[in-house]
Picture 1 (cartoon, one colour):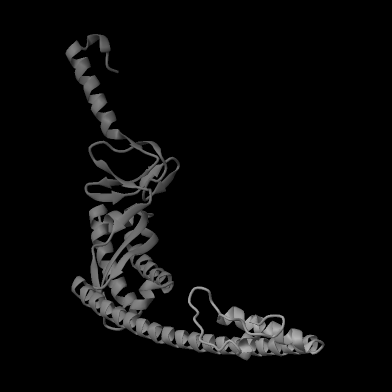
Picture 2 (cartoon, helix red, strand yellow; picture 1 turned 180 degrees about the horizontal axis):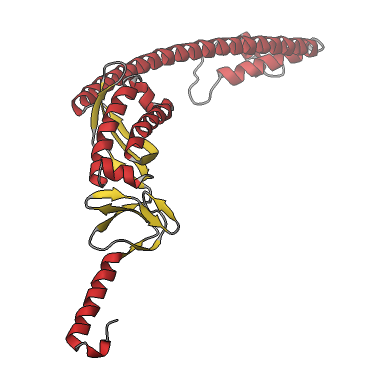
Length: 306
């Protein structure tokens, strides 16, 4: 036993410092969002966590290790993001596509992860190569239109299965894969855009020509129908007018046949009204003209002036 009373303050302070250093190198904390492996002389070793021996630690709390000999490497246990660099690949029609994709993954085996890729930079490098191979194999079997329709989901599902199978060797689980963009290269896109623009202009001109042709047909048909309607209306009006005139003549004939003199008088008055205008009518007629008989006096003599 060490008699603390015989130790000098300097020795006690040194002892306390040694204990603090030992404690600092013996204790470590695994957080809620962390998992860890214990390294001994640069190599992963099994670790006694509670009452069991594990290859990696995935339970949070305060842990104890051998000081100075063992070290701890931490890994995130949350879902992580990976964005692949733009890849150029070919579809089934041998068209070049520039594809941008990303994935969400989780480290499920920190020991395998550490041994094969070491850190996040290492797994990102591996995933980038895996994505390149998977995109080339999967998109190479699909036409361009598959990337622009609902078939895109099937393509992404196949890529996810392919990437998941290969990524499992590195201790990670792929949660999701998405293709952000799948476009033709810029120079191809511009050429296609110009061709599409020319095609759409051609279609527009054809539609305009067809529209003008149809408008002429419609206008011609409408004018024809209008002419027919007017002709029929005119014919009907003439028929009605003729029937009316005939009926009027019949009525006049029946009415005036009862008094022929009155009929003659009435017709002559009508002729006077229409033929003799105060403003502009000059007539050169004999005073004994039959037309002027109603200007004669009561004894049948013609007037002296006309």
